[in-house]
Image (tube, rainbow, N blue to C red; front, side, top):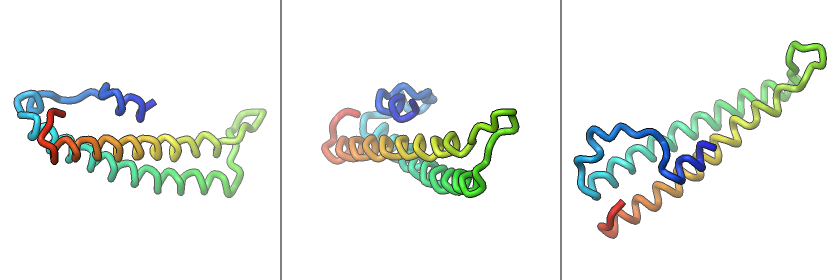
Amino acid sequence: MGAYTLQKGAHVRVDVLYVHLRAKGQAVLDLVNYGLLLVWSIVLITEGWAFFWRSFSVREVDEMVLAHPVYPYKFFIVVGAFFIALQGIAQLLVTLRTLLRGGKV
């Protein structure tokens, strides 16, 4: 869901500074944002994987009577972060191309 929202440009953005910039300035600000997104995604993927792996290695289950396995849900943290990272890379490349060609964002 997060990667789709990023692709559609529907994330909440603080436009106090952004709307007053020209297209080139907006592209530079977008590059910084996507760079930070990639750093966050990498941290979330690595930490999420460790979180999943600890749970998987002990076959963690919830405390309910049926003892549902928990580790599959923890794996989806990694999957979601991976898709957000992929979309972030795509958006970063589009913004970089826009910046280099001098077009509108």
